[in-house]
Image (cartoon, rainbow, N blue to C red; front, side, top):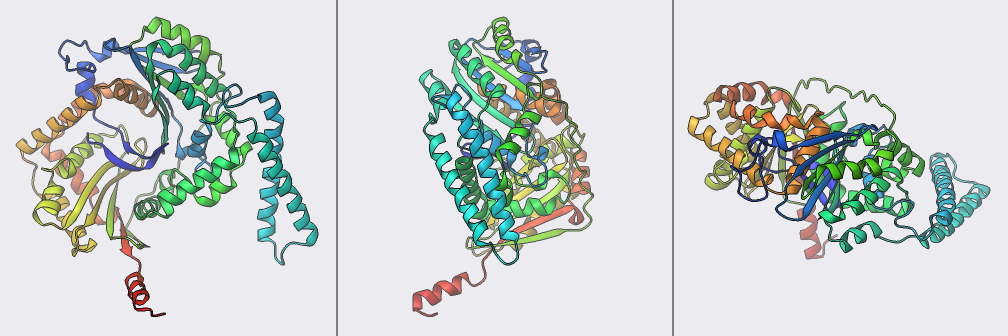
Length: 533
């Protein structure tokens, strides 16, 4: 399906789009990086799967057209695994995973470690005392103020001492020197992912680096990076009209499930995270038994298995964890929220829907494409081209995650002088049309063909296929889930679309978020220009 903006999946460069859900056509044909599709054997026969004793899953596909391999490491861990008071810890750990290990990113770990240990103790003690005093009635005594000043002095000294041992950005520079590209990571509600493409003869280097990173991460520059993440939150969520709208809207839509919490976390939680809590989260969730490594490209599976067994095979499995995720109660009435901001108005509308594996899932993928995939899609044609109500309109069939019941969302920006109310009414007209009029065979065929074409393009690259294999293994428990995706979409009928639209696109099941121009903004500007108070 088409790529759409997923506001809750954050990578090292910001928000990352939702991944393709329907991948069957390309997969069944066994796509190669070029157009030699017909000559390719079935991917079902080409994927080689290996499971290590510690639970790590390895998926491999040989493509020898170029001497390059793309690798995707996906952990079945994300924002929904966080505890109350520790929101954002999964995303924060992803940041810390780039800081190196006991052998990478340090000039002398034996000397660095005791400094980091003391820094963690002093920093945790200092921040706890500061919080206690902030809550104290009557303010701090002179003795308490002196104690905090002494802790702050020692904290600053330790920060400076620790900084002398840091080799900045050594992980990225190592890969760069050896021809690596696309070194990145992303954290979402369901998954955490690490990617790299590099010359196939550098696989031993990759295995050494990544097995070390999985086994021996070091939380260096902890407090500095925590500040970086907090600044990222301010930039993307608090000071961004779109980011703040989606955060407020999503939180209103979910009352119980973790999908309602922003992946980046709440500001107060981010600033109270400790090294001990972050390390405990890593040890609990980021074991090899929760990871899938997909390698696609110029590889020889037997040699790859031997290499991974020697490196990753030494890492012990993480302890078994049972995650009890709250079930989101049925919504019984429309929810509406407004966000005031000095920005142009916009609107987002969301309807609760089932998650991965539900029979209605492929129907939403088709509806998604009907409404906003390309210039001929219904919402674009009606709202943007014909009626000129909106400057842009988008839909997303899996917001903010895929695994559990989520939201089908529609977002739009009005075209002045039109209002969000006009755009909202026009959107509902198109949704009612889905209920009232069967989609024509011609339109349905066109949409499904476009979905297939999107997937052909998406899986033509090694990195695209590696991403899909690792994602579905982690999120669905079996990469073979993708083998029947096209069949499920192709089986969608006009009657299915009417049934699903009628069942889910209801007023009582929807949440509406509206970005409104902050009251008084324009008047303040006029007064300022005229020199008025």
